[in-house]
Length: 625
Image (cartoon, rainbow, N blue to C red):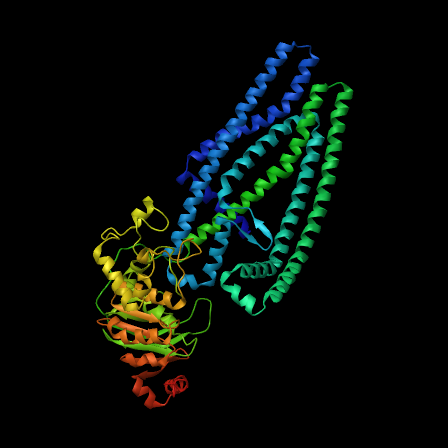
């Protein structure tokens, strides 16, 4: 019942969507309808007409003219049919582009908290399968949203053809028409059961299929190539491929066996229909009520009617229903949660006061409390270190403070204003952040640091790139150039960039750009730091900024940290406790709470967990120099 409601909802919504975005598709569909029916009819009618005119003794001239007239009419209908379908398919592409753009915009603007919500991610994945194409197990999903108008036209035109030919079949034998209807319902039932079990077998085998796909992709992954060879993982991976492939084939074998049984049943029904149909035709001819030309006409019409009803019409209906469900899912995706909007807010440069009042947090769908009843005030300009064991909630706390996540309980104040009362862009304008997962866009170093897209970007010149380019600052602007180099120098990457042929125009992300430059983990971390410094917001959050750096580079960052954090409220998250002595205050998070608080010296004197962790880390350095 729920699926029926979703199907009808999605169908109506898609019709409205087409009317809003591309009304001309309905005109193309109206023209396609008679062209399709007429073209099919002429193909069936022509052989019988030729024989009838020969039987009636028509002249060769008359026969030639009438034949050419029918052929010409048929060609006109075929051309019109093809032309209209091409316009429908082009319109479908435009509608799909619109939906894909809306899909992407949703991902860009939905509140960040939903990106860690399992329910939303599940809806997103299903929507992506319907919109971009995908698979469940081994069964390809062909019911893509792009095919809605194609299938709607095919349902209407094949339905029209079936009704048209049914009059001729009724005229031949009313009982034959009734038998055909009964047989078609039997075939529809068999196919429905077949589809049900195909999906069931595919979903049962999905885990094996996904594991097989994962292992196969790992063998293609260049970053895994060294480990595969050095640790002799080839035999192990080959065994996994064989194992999961056997599991997948076990379900595939059941599916193929069921499909074979269904084909035998459908073939038997088709043979029975064929036998009864031609018995009726030959019997009428024997009685003298129809001639040879009529036999030829019926011989072409009968099989065509059966195949249109049992295959074309059924398949189009099935796909249309799947697409309608897919579009209802797309609507559910688009309506999910709250979007952040697109306000343009200037970066806030002044250092704010940040207060946490009884803040607790749990991730959506989880009963585990990650952070519990935190009460904390960070004065403007304070340099605060956040330390703790793995999984203590340090990164989660940073996401809460910069407004990406929302407290489950309590509130966070920014200069006395509850952050929940601020628009997302207003919250984000206060923060410059580096997180542990280093990500770049496939653009130049210049663009990745300034986050201003050049009209001459790595993706080529286009109207879109010109529109995205910063309106108030050209990429050749001297201040921007100098500022980028200054931030690279502060992050310790200036010398590395100067040695590159393209320098700031060096393109990143080799998996997208063939001529891109790959950087080491430490270099990438420095580039991310340069980006945060370029933004120059009032709050600086550095989450494990030295995790991939060598000891000398790490020490360089520590010595420069005071300069980074000058006139800013700053947070330095790290496992390496040697970094904390550069901060005004240290918070040790443990079990979701602030367990210890103070300066480096005060926490060592307290001889608590911080002192234990520092003693363990420093033990490996004693006596080295």
